Length: 260
Image 1 (cartoon, rainbow, N blue to C red):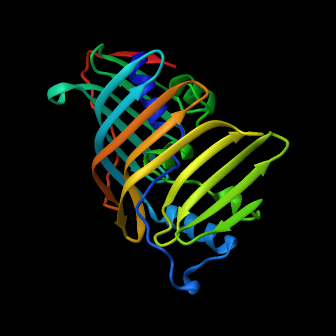
Image 2: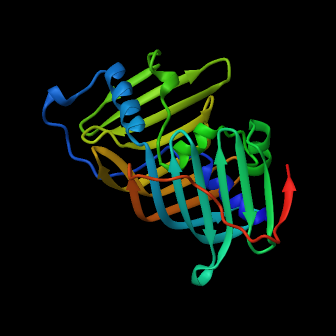
């Protein structure tokens, strides 16, 4: 179970970066001021109501080296289900998390863990401070900029093909840097830096595809440099905003239920 939980941890951890081919911006009318840019980025994130994806997770840490097939199904704001599969489609684990409850089914051991999805419980499962909304955005490759809607960036640059936004938290001694492709508004790079210059986290997205004018990455690389942890996520298929019914996890009647 430990390895499977680590898979969920780093998949959900800090996905907010990317890399996508771009072209020079020729029309100055396409250039957005910082406040409009942030509003459009946040509006695009909120366009995603449901998300379905299948692909491969590849995790490299000092403790483990693991690669597995996975499937994620999410319905905002209700729930997200993540399934992990081994060779030949063998089911290994399923996790279903909502704002109030969670269920984790370890198929191989036939153990079912369930309880209230409080932040301290999510931290116990994923080994990181993670809210339900953070989990939803992470699997959708989205960046939550809600807290930036009413604040001006400390740095705002525009070159021929990208925007660069910088936000400095002087009290925390940290700086966040976002790079956004100017043509399609895909976030292409994110760094969290401990001032004056130590990179704590860095991630990249690539192989973007247009879904209803929202560009979603098929491939993501996230590095927790301070802990020497790397996760590669590569989607084979993605669907958004399709009708999704209630999400459930099926398990046998002889399952051992463990309350958390």
